[in-house]
Each structure stands twice: as structure tokens, then as C-alpha cells.
Length: 279
Ligand code: SAM
Image (cartoon, rainbow, N blue to C red; front, side):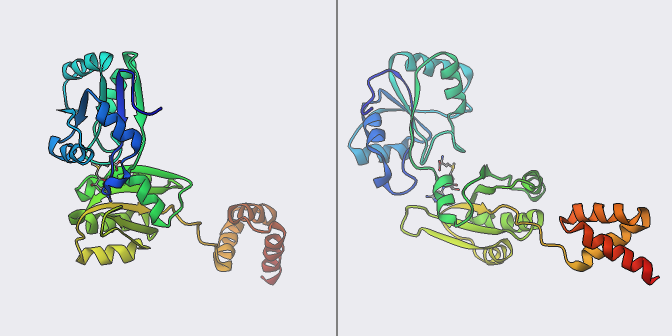
């Protein structure tokens, strides 16, 4: 598909910094749109200037009333209506979800022109596992609420993606360290712009660095999944066996501890019998 011919709602991703990332389909759709729903007319106005078009803009956000959305849906029935956000992919920590939901419920044509999103771009630059990830967006700004949100993510075996800003970054990293432990992480900043950088380190290193420094620009924080549990030491296994022997006969104690530590049951059974004979 190239330029849209059909009336409907077109979700259009726009660049997150470098205007060269506007796709041809996105440009054609914006040029052809009867109405462009925007967060801020000044921001999207610059993008439209860049492509030399003057489509009609209308401010939209998810706080608009159901009646406002119904009026937009009336337009979607017979016009090409594009939805953009200030930058990146609409709906991703940006407005649009309620409109898409209502348009689909009304049986209207809805399609997407995919493109940049800071979350995915940052994940690819983080050097952290990208096979499983969870996008959390912005955490709450107060420590108590932020720690509660982090606690809910603690056991997930996935990389975690957060949007942040420079003034809260140090506190966010300190809370993440306290709740999640000293995981690997990356602070990815100003993606596709002149001062793009990805700073990797442990959460303790990054929390120390950004306690002192408030970086400028737009920021995504990626925190790696929990590491594999540390291998138990011989002393840990022996202590568990001694404790189990207080409650259980040698064969059962050896079986229980072997299962818990994923180790050899026979060797533990022999050890338990040796201790018994040494008494
Ligand atoms: N919908 C957008 C997207 O798909 O990327 C995200 C919108 S959200 C309101 C804005 C946040 O995204 C910023 O505060 C920042 O955390 C992140 N962000 C946007 N552009 C970025 C960039 N070029 N580099 C790093 N982070 C960026």
C-alpha cells in the first residue's frame, strides 16, 4: 500500500529525533490526510513544514470526552484521519488507545503506519537481553509508589523498559537498585539525535553516576532480567543437610536437599552416614 485511498483512522509513527526516519508511507499518509489528530499543533506543524504540507490539525488526547471522540469517529467514517503524537509511535505512553478502541468497536477502518518508538530503539542499543521484555513507560515520581511498581516487576524474567527524565533519573536508579538488586542496566539518551549515547553498567554504578549528574535530553532506562541464582556453596548444602537430618532419616534428608540444590542424592546420603558413624 502507498498513499491511503480509503477513509479511516491511520495511526502514524513519526521520528523520535531524526526527521530522516519519517517513512515514505507516513509522509504520504500525512500529506493526504483530511485531518491530523495531534498532541501539539506547534510540534506537528514543524514536521508538516518539513514535508511541505499544510494538512488540517486538530488537538486530541485521551482526556477528551466520549462525545468529542464520537465527533471524531463521524469524521473517520468518511475522511482520512491520521493520528500522530509529538514523536514516535502513538498510544505508546501517548494518546490514542481510547480512540482506536472506539473506532474498532464502531466497525471503522483502522490501520497503522509503523515506525520509530524510543522503547524499542533503546532496547536495541542497551546491550541487554532483547528476547523477553516488558515496557513499563513512566514510573511514578514519588519513591513509595515507584518502589511499589518496581516490586510488582521484581520476579519477571525479562528486560524492563522505562521512560525517564534527567531530573528524576538518579532517584529512579537508586530505587531500582534497592528493590531489584544490582542488575545490569543501561541509560539510553537522545536516540537518533546529535548527542545520542548508551551508558551501560550495574545499577549501583549508574545510580552513583547519576546521583551527581542530571543528564539533559530524552531518556530511556533499560534494566536487565534477574541473574541466575548464585550457585550454592558446599557449606550451604552441608548446613541444609544437617538441618534436614534433625527432622528426617538420612535417605529422606539426602533426597530433600539433593532436590532443593539440584545436586547428587547418593553423595549426600553417604555424607550423612559418615557423620552418623563419626558420632
Ligand atoms: N510514543 C513515544 C514513542 O513511541 O517513543 C514515546 C512518548 S513518551 C511521552 C516520551 C518519552 O519517550 C520521553 O520522555 C523519553 O523518555 C522517551 N523518548 C522519546 N524520544 C526519545 C529519544 N530520542 N531518545 C531517548 N528517549 C526518548
